[in-house]
Image (cartoon, rainbow over all chains, first blue to last red; front, side, top):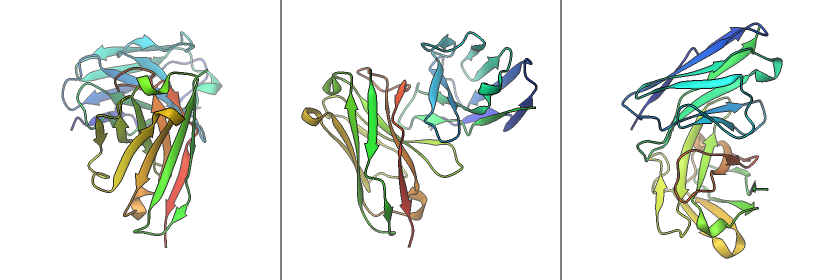
Length: 108
Length: 120
């Protein structure tokens, strides 16, 4: 099973500042990685797939990079509506499909 | 517009059974793989089970293997999850999710979820 580890657990960022979230895989997943945003009481929403491709309708302030075992999601200028939990998910080798434990982004 | 709508969540005792349903619309249901993902209260996302469009291939998380059965009724555009021998740790919001692709990878479309509570 590929274990996905996200850091930090919580990130507090001021509006307009940059937020950088990390995701590490226990073995290479190449670029088979997605990022999701989940707000309280809502289902997750895909932000990124293929490690760096923004999903349809996702604002350009969300970008992502990485390959292999190290991945980064960046929110370039944090907006109040970006307060949420963010998850990474690998789909290179499954079952099982695996998610990271999440990073909670708070507005400072 | 792709829509997924789960139902069937309830309060059940340990050892009991439940059947969840997910009704799909807005795409040709029988062509595409679809998945159940769950989220325990205050916890992260956990993949549970996936099924191919033709239902000839199914996959399960180790935590539910032998207790849960995924199936689909393509004529009714409905995905099912039959859950037996329920445990307290099965308590979660259960989402159905898909990408509208032949294979399972990441998930573009999600339902709103249905809550399963296992408690005595």
